Amino acid sequence: MTEPLLPAAQTPHELDFISHSPAQTERIGARLGHLLRAGDVVLLSGPLGAGKTHLIKGIARGLGYDGPVTSPTFVLINEYRADAAHGRLPIYHVDLYRVSGVTELATIGLDELWLADGVCLIEWPERAAAALPPDHVHITLSYVSETKRRLRLAPHGARYRELLAMFKEATFG
Ligand SMILES: Nc1ncnc2c1ncn2[C@@H]1O[C@H](COP(=O)(O)OP(=O)(O)O)[C@@H](O)[C@H]1O
Ligand SMILES: [Mg+2]
Image 1 (spheres, rainbow, N blue to C red):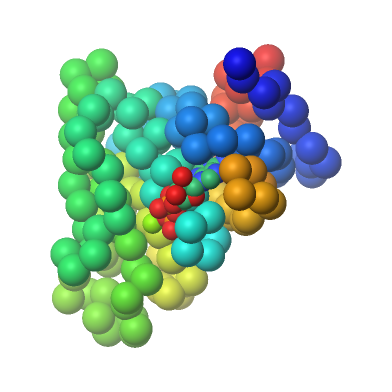
Image 2 (cartoon, protein in one colour):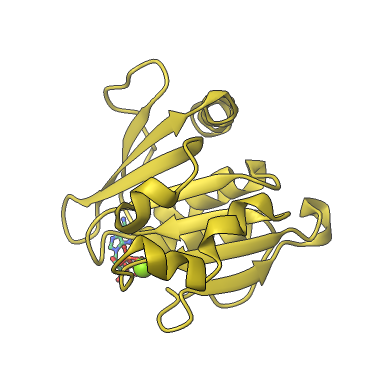
């Protein structure tokens, strides 16, 4: 049994809806992941337990990666690999929760990550806002109830408005 995914109030470019389960959050992620390509940047905000890592797991699944997905802790960046159908793109999963300053960012190689030939998925982007590329899709997750989360997707830049238009079409028809 699957709850229908209905878009709530939206501006022309932003998407705002409720996920009713972790599995639904993963499916939403997979639909987005399927559309990503080299150079794309996805920022994920929301408190601990909001579902950022779950959504990223779905995004990685959508790119054909089947292995484990967990928030990077001490290494800060996990690297996964998309399947052949998605060009075997590197998938960079970054968690900046423990990062305290922009100087620290250079030492983990974050400053050049989005110039590489991969997809960047970044948790806790507010820790490094000034250092992140201006064009990106910003996803904000918030807690609604034990099993429900609100997801807001905001595009910044033409590529991401196009990406969200494709995602909307694929998701809501
Ligand atoms: N609709 C939902 N979407 C995503 N996670 C959910 C949802 N409902 C409950 N959860 C639970 O919330 C937690 C989210 O954990 P996680 O993805 O690691 O969050 P974050 O990375 O934001 O800290 C998991 O325990 C998951 O099972
Ligand atoms: Mg996480």
